[in-house]
Every structure is written in structure tokens, then in C-alpha cells.
Length: 355
Image (tube, rainbow, N blue to C red):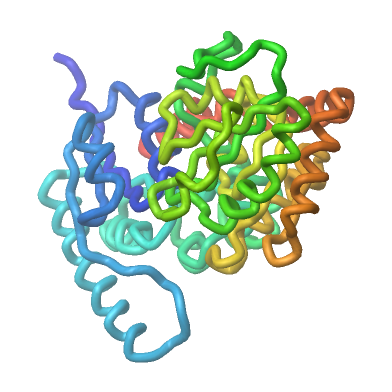
């Protein structure tokens, strides 16, 4: 008789930074019966149902000061925890895996209240509040950055890197879906899953100098930029989103980006030099900590948005475009930060924990 497969509930919600590592890990567990926990009207409702059954609970974020909003949030967490607890019991799950964020709270609390294992993956160099609060309750905490260990002294933690989408795990040259001159310098601008209007404005002002240097600018603007069509040039291609991101990272000489952990992991895998502009309103400024880890390895240049002018960005990028040796050094440094078998390591840790 064949053994009944183990059942795993994955709690990952909101952004690609939470969802893509979770999906990459799930793909390494083909022998498991996997279902998903998320929040209505978030990205998981588009990505997850294609592969996994999706359960949702209503839950807000943990931002802001204590007050009436905190009481409402606590009520939401308690209600969601009860719902998840009932789900775990009813469907006879063997454990929970989460990639952090607010959805992790009810998942971890419900699992531990039933004596089930809870494994958490934290991709950021500065762990989020939920990770810091609940990591001592977890069976295991897997980390994307070594720097995170100092913030979680009571956790049973191990550094495994951050899993990436399968398209980033190849050494072969990938297509870009664009027609670009083979020898032209390429500057790729990405602002994360929501775009980055402030970065977009800086780039459009700096871009003419890059065009004069013969560079092409490939610009992922996101969907929130009303001025997205304001710059027109033969060497400028902009879209809200590009599908072939791995190929674009490979082709780019320089990437201008926010500093989300998922994006940085992808830059490490494609060995792409970068100029990082951490999102200044990220929770607890955690993107600055991610960027600092890349800067310390000499894999990226980092600039605070408040301190960055179009001229400064223009000159910083031109310096890299005109210095192939420096770019090669940055590429090698970025590659040294990649952990190619991160998803496999994480999947094996889940297997060991749920044994």
C-alpha cells in the first residue's frame, strides 16, 4: 500500500517577495499535498489557484502605532487564528510553512496551538515584526541573509538564502522578448511589483545623458505612474510589466532597482551590477538593510532616495557604463551572494521537520 502523502499548508500573501519564494519551495515538494493560505484581493488570488487550493482569511497589516486600529487588528488576528486552527484540524494538515508577513501570525499561532510544526522563511536582512515576535514559537526559521541572525537570538535558525523562480536558475542565455543592438549598453529600471514612481521620475530626467552615451533604457514603470508616457526616445522602452525578467537581468549592464529581498536574490543569480534605491517607506526601513548587505559585498551601489538627484543618478550609472572592469567585479560579488539550491535546502528542512 502506498503511504498517504503529508499535507502542508503554505501561508504566503501580498507581494511577489512573499509569494515567489513560497511557490519555488512548493515546487520542490512534489510528494506533498499542498494547500495555500492567503488574503482576499491580493496577488495570491491570481497566482496560486492555478496550482494549489487557496483558503483566505481577512487580515490587515501591522503598521502604525498602538491605538483603536491595533485593537481591531488584534481581533482580526484572533479570528483568523481560529479559522486557520479549524482548517488545520478539519483537513488534517501535518504542518505549516510561511514566508512571513502578517499572514504568518495566524498560521504560526494556529499550528503551534495544535502541536503542529511551523517553519518560517524570512528573506530580509532585518526580519519583520511578525518574524521577530513569533520566531521563538517556530520549529525552524530559515533565513535569506546571514545578517538576520543577530536579530533573532532565540530562534532555531539556519541560513539558506531565498528561493527564486525557476527561470532564474539557468546558466543559459535567456530571451528578452525585445530587439536590442548586441553591443549597446542596457540600463534596466525596475521598481518592484508596485512600480516606483519616485524612481521613475529620477530616471526620466537622467535618461537623456544615457542616450547620448549610446545606452538603451528598459523601464518597468508599474501601473501607478501617470507620467509613464512622458518620455519618448528610440532607445527607450517602457511597459508596466515585462514577462521575461530573467533574460532582461542577464542582458542589462546595470539595473536600477528598489531593494526588496526577492529582487536582490534575482540580481545575485543573474550576476547583474546594480544601483539600489531602497524604498524609504518600507516597514522599519528593511530595504535599507537588504541594500547594505549587497553594498558590503561590493555587489551594488546604494543611494537613499532623499539624497538622490537626477544628476547624481545620471553620473553614477554613466560611471558604471564606462567602466566594464568595475561592472565585472560587481557581477562576481553579486554571484557570491547567490545560493543556487536554496529552494531544495528549504524543502529538505521542511521534510525533516515534518517527519
